[in-house]
Image (spheres, rainbow, N blue to C red):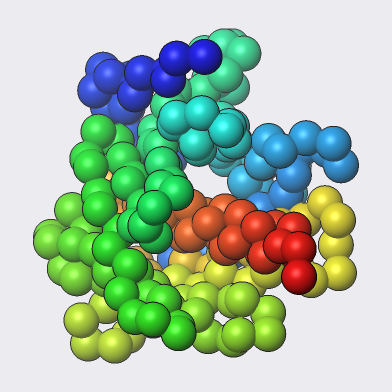
Length: 205
């Protein structure tokens, strides 16, 4: 089967939903037999913000803005981001609203991911694991201020985890774009972590 083409820029230019910070997002599988993922507002779990299609083919993750589907009556929302993984190295290729991001893996025993954030004016952000036991990780800026955290749900078969967006409140679409970028990157890293766990569990000794 041929690889699917990346979403075009015209598919990714709608303005992001408005965010206030700090904010917690709940990340859940659509069902026990589905790899699809729903992103909910933890303060109002009836409010779905995004959903994610996970595939074995590129793009491996496609992020949809559910709020645009609700507003227009469409079956799926606008594509706002993608993520692609690699077999031969740990870097991750991400797009957010048409902006390409390269998440560069650094370190040997404790991998961290570094990238320059278009939404934050080119600031360097670093995602790193906080706990080897749970796999939880956080994102810090150049001043080592934590701007986001992801916590895995260890005892739930349906809930993947929760993402806390800790950005200081910003202005309009700028704050929303930063929060959305952190959401896409953070959940790409969560999916990468889950994939690594599954691969490790299938290794025959």
